[in-house]
Amino acid sequence: MPDDVRLAHSTLSHLQCSRTGVTLDADVVQGLSPDGAPLLARYDLDRARETVTREEIATRPPTLWRYREVLPVRHPAHVVTLGEGMAPLLPLPRAGARLGLPRLLLKDEGLLPTGAFKARGAAVGVSRAAELGVRAIAMPTNGNAGAAWACYAARAGLGALIAMPVDAPEITRRECVVAGAELYLVDGLIGDAGRLVADAVARRNAGSSDGPGHQDSANYQDTSTLKEPYRIEGKKTMGYEIAEQLGWRCPDVVLYPTGGGVGIIAIHKALQEMIELGWLTGPMPRLVAVQAAGCAPIVDAFEAGLRTSTAPADPRTVAFGITVPKALGDFLVLDAVYDTGGTAVAVTDDELLAAEHALARDEGTWICPEGAACVAAAGRLRESGWLAESDEVVVLNTGSGLIYPGTVTADAPVLATDGVIP
Image (cartoon, rainbow, N blue to C red; front, top):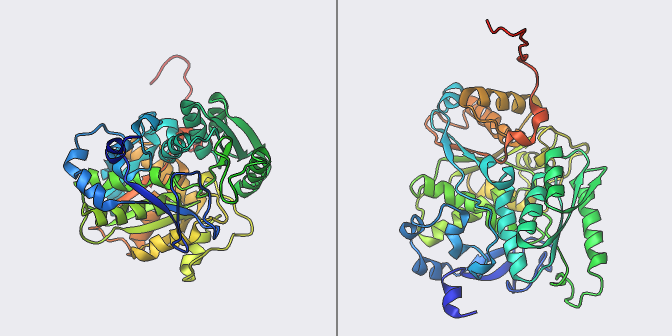
């Protein structure tokens, strides 16, 4: 493609191993690094700084592609979009007053296409896969990611192979099916689904001549969490948006529901990039990894001062999206927390469900249980004094409560009528 087209779009320069720093070619399909670690996309940020300003970004359409210079898609013709991005940053005055946090804000990702923040990673990951010649994506999922990637694969004209636990939300299963994905249900957890997907991809790509670490560009790419480098790039736009929505400054604290951990890793990466670009000054926000008590390996590792986590023996929580016993990028999640002076906290299912219901009554927004875990955690951290009343706090809601109808209980009965409402 002409150099001027490339210069006007992405400043992607290379991929880098998150563990060893070894660099790899960004313009071929890549999986993990030779060391078996996630790869991170790196950009020529000096060139990006010279190419675009924050003021110019403000004039662009309100999608995540407004940050195209620091996204990996080389040519605008390869962008696959359903209008994702610029989820609202909502003040929560009643909930904040109740929790003792008058500057409480909600980044509501439940309003994105497919009903969850997973649309961000899917949009960028599918766009880059299509640009590199991939014909089909394959992945395990706890529900929302599979639904998003199936829909964006359909939008791009790619095939999709999805495996999810049988206990995953039924609505996400239906999203996969309606988008034409090849869907398999697994009696187990996301790790069990991941092993089946890896085996299927290896067999379907048998005969590839690309060598270890690569998938045949004519066949299936394994897009499991952090096994391809571009899901992070889509999700990091949450960090760019929060900064832009606050007038190019940071809040004091960001709370994020953490399973596979891509979101908190991505926000940390965005903050580092914006500081290097000169778009942000001052300290980073403290990042808080929020988990459910029934599956809290990151919290356990943080409390022990460790850099990696250990899978719990019997992981289970109603917040199904964060039921990830052992995250491939656990060390990156913990790095983000340690680097920003943050913390990790676990809440019980009872606490997060109560927070979900209370927020809906307070503010009229029905968020997912994973997002509700962040609201419950904010209250817990305020009670302990870790959060101050003066702190500006952003909680991430990663999906719509409509995906999880089973989390609504009959604590207030629906009233019957014989034709008269008193």
